[in-house]
Image (cartoon, rainbow, N blue to C red; front, side):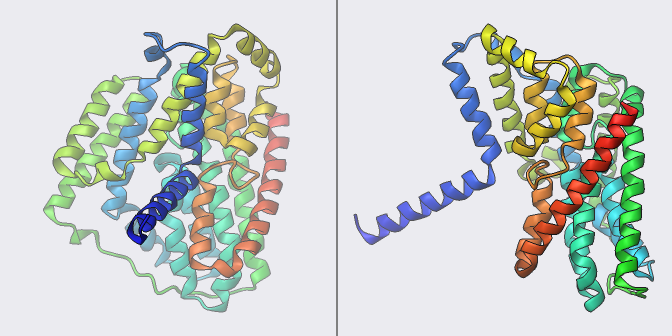
Length: 391
């Protein structure tokens, strides 16, 4: 083997390793699907496993959020708000609040992808004051995105899926999660206040300035109008007022015609991950021994198992897996949302912030991880107590 072939081989191995590292959950889902096929031979019933409504809605929502992010809507809105603050507490509560409230509509992943880089930029202009706030604020943003997203069916993938299979009314979902969201918001406010008091009474002014929305071209304004209409269609579909097929076709058609680059940014690996787990659950549900054993273990302990399992396999796959073996979906909704707290992989969205810190401030990643873990355990304890009182 010559040097060129050796280099090609090494590059291929490196790419495979990087892909496996990046898409671990997808690979696990596909392996489980393949293994389960040895127990249940592929047949026509496989098609019935797939929840196409969830996949169609996920694709539509990702198209809208990626399109708006590409137009800079979220970043410009955040810059406008940040440009108005004058104190450390005002800046901190805005940065945390942006993740908390935006995640209810644009998902926890998109919220962190959008606002954590903006936070790093804003805090870097404050010198020592920014250094003091960096770790606690990014950690609180991560927690805020994971907890704010639990209020709505479109806040995160597991909510969208569980809401769809439960046949709940939208108002029932909101009422179910509202008490926990209020407690989470109050705790985030108090923790942010404590962080800023510990850092001292700092007066800050970032170099970030508001950007004028009038600078958008006619083409961009047309795109924005289209995405707003698509988002309305998504909401109507979530409320079961419009068939998901219409919304999905509209999202696909609009993006293909008006903003083709968006189709390259949609997270197709998430859609494939769902498919893998759907096949695994469907097959295992047809294996009587496996189904009866797992159902007996889960029955009556859905909430606890959802929280614990999320710490190991993350809350999205946990929701998909457990939903196939219990009908107590309210407990799964609460458990998988609260289960997003805890370990770094309990919610895959948490890895977004961690990777940002590792790239921009590698020397503090150890302290970040320690603070993240301590804060998550504290929030998880409070939320678990809230569940015990309210549920």
